Image (cartoon, rainbow, N blue to C red; front, side, top):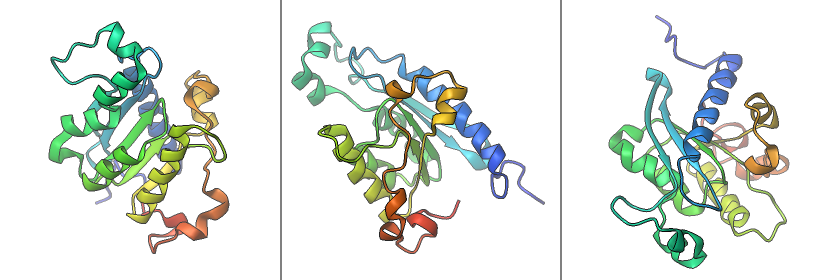
Length: 198
């Protein structure tokens, strides 16, 4: 019996559902009270066609998210949980085998370690850019390198997906894969481009 939820050999179905979950992650990102960055994450068990958990960037439960703290960058960065971290905490062991959809910023190196250790199989997120002075681009490039080495597939959000959702490409970050020209360098025996087989 064929699994009706599988995307194998059905790229059009995967693209359709990827776009839907990207849209949901964008919607959830708007719940963040962070005035500078709104990030949303959705963990999906594709085999069961089930949303396992969601998360957005914010302070821990019962910690006051006052405007003074949110607007003081150094304080905020020391206190805030990333969207991916919140989604993984909400999912617990249910994160194993999930796909993670992240909108708002590239996945950072710390979140990449948690996604890898939690058993997430695929990450769909904004691609970090090469050659910028941005901290988020720098840690995002390291995150992709780590995920690919660990056999976690990375799929950059495409401009077409952002267009389909009516999202501003600049706000959601450029969607080109920074490693596309260097695929062979990241082939760690997990298939083309170092990605784990989907």
